[in-house]
Figure 1 (cartoon, rainbow, N blue to C red):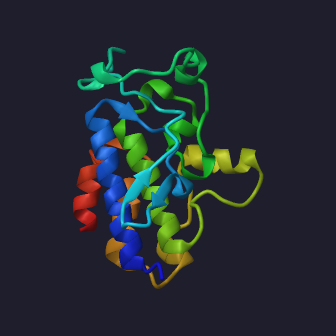
Figure 2 (cartoon, rainbow, N blue to C red):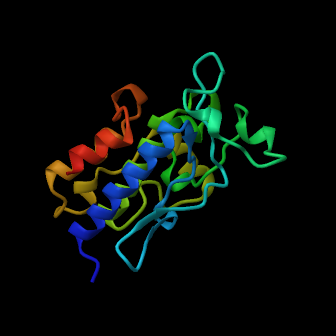
Figure 3 (cartoon, helix red, strand yellow):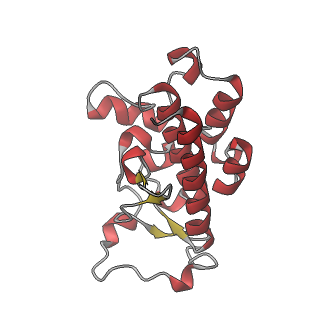
Length: 185
């Protein structure tokens, strides 16, 4: 049986996997529960890196560690330009939902990790129900029902971790996925 402690342990492993990817200069940009697999031997896999992109510094140059990144030939230049909204709206950060690709950094993936934690705690995505435009608008504004309002059984400590990761302001989120994993422990 998959218990909450076991799910949280795997989730912590996924946070560490993302911390590693970020240390290599890579953003996932489409983190969601379907992209975190639990293996038969206790392993945790983060999959589907099709929307991944290099983390860029504010001057537009690749971040440290990204020299080892090799994007696939023909990587769509439009996927890395401001104005393009790519990913799964139910789990995306406000800046991603607004198509502000140049503002995306590791905290954008941290937001998505918080949204996955939200789904673990509540059984639903933070942005669900309604049509695509409604969900996208709520994602852009970061408007979601607090986890404990959906499920009173959620511990205040886990809700606090979720809410910090999903802060509308990237400056108020965990700086790294490893920091989030540490709080989760």
